[in-house]
Length: 252
Image (cartoon, rainbow, N blue to C red; front, side, top):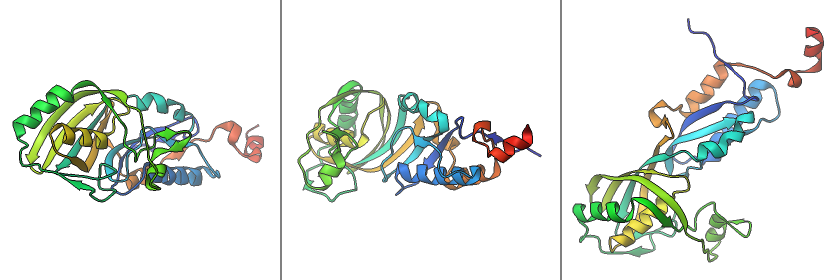
């Protein structure tokens, strides 16, 4: 019989979750935080994530607890892999399905060969990208997406990023599916916008899955429910300085 693993959430643990469609990254954090706090008998415990996934995206979300939250910047810097489906011929203000179509374009002129050439020549290596208005970027201390949702004009400066690999894996127009390996800070929604423009059309993101963060692949991730079940089954280690005084007295 396999021994029950002991976890030390205060000292720090790192978990990988396959974030479900429709959940925010913070929804996952809240669920894990609540379970750990309950198991440890504490009011709260520090839990964070290393790299936001939009509610309409699924896939690898790295969760850190306790002192392991100090590793978030390190983990966020890891190379990420995505599988993204773009729809040509239409754009939306958010560059995905969060908002309604605001303009339509011709797309029939786009060929597989032409798209592959543009991806290779213009979207491989170091590129500049203007983040989406509907993003967590800050302008004078305010989140861009909050301003955009209120109808305010949002101007963001371009950022440099690196696309290590971009591969066309399916061409079923007006949709195309890409596999993308990229650096921290890449907005796949913005990439959809830019690829649409480069093809003399418009495009927006209709599906997105993060399949890898560093060496962590999505097929090795917990579901939210399986992680909660795992946290229920494991023994929890409580640092001595946080043990109730009566317990410490019994030990002495």
